[in-house]
Length: 533
Image (tube, rainbow, N blue to C red; front, side, top):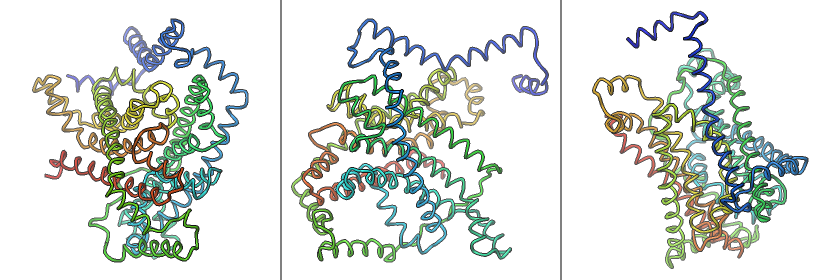
């Protein structure tokens, strides 16, 4: 009966009239109003809380005060700081995307480059951008060069890796056609490989936009006298949370505009049909002693620059000194203790944020009204760069462990929420028909159909949440003073100009990040091993 009705609706395409059309329009009107329900309720609660003084105005400023700040700072000062941040962002994006494109094409097209260079590049990419900031501060100071270098580091990695995959895994039939047509090398690159790699490259650029904007705000919060991040720090120091809220709103709008603008550009560039034109190469990349040539050469140059005083040892200490500091820190327990404390924060935040993300994703995926009510608001909040919440969270929760756990939980929340919702949305409609036929209750549907079907997406989201929780832990220890932690150790070493301690901590941070990523992959493979049966 449902199939007949759906076919009947497909047959009739004329304008509806009468009571049925009126009911359809009223239903659409109600559906279009649902996304505004949550923001309106929050706004009303905000107004009532400020009037009844449920919280101090220094903790929760009134909406009228935020509006007055918008009028006051929006007359010029806010836009001036925002323009400085955008100039930094677009400058870093231009350099980073260009470098990542060239590097990705080279690595993807050259098997030898994949063997010699790619392992070293991937190993360095395991160290989060935040972990490089203390080292970059000692090398480049706290001026504009620091912002540019941090931005380029954040942008180059996703663009390079995605471009590499797009060029390397281009459909073999396209390569065969180019060989049959005897296209010159430059035409093969321009007419075959680059168009085939364009979707992957644009995916890398999309990620670079988000990571670049987030990294810029992080470095402006840490070391800047201009920019929207500095304005937030200034407002937080003066306890002007109205200005902080205004900056968060502006940062979210910029993130949304960047996302919308890039989506429009992507639709314009990828105008041809997008079948599965890629084919992943089978088997691992060739490894062996050749992949060790580049790292060993770099280590030799590094040691020589220190031994022959080519560079001041206070700025660039020798790798042997770093190794000695690492072993000494492991022996006296200082490094394991700091690392253990950071991992505890990571797991606690992951438990809080990951659980909320999983439950939220299940709710949005299974309940259409809930998705209409909460989905648009959560999507808008996701546009706010992660580190933009730091001044507000420190004002609300203080500088203790609670604020760190909330921040790490926020970092882990959205990846699992989005992955769970999309995993449920991609389930086959036949599963719903089977559940109705078998008369399964809600718990049985979840246990037998929904969770197993969405498990690949959920565990992929868990893997991302692990990485983001670790990144959030490093950021929390940077911005919120703490008694211990691996990032706190780095900050103390930076203040003492101990380059050996900074680099030893960076090495551990990279290793832990790689291990967490591997752990996420193992969990995903083990939980979804039935897919390969």
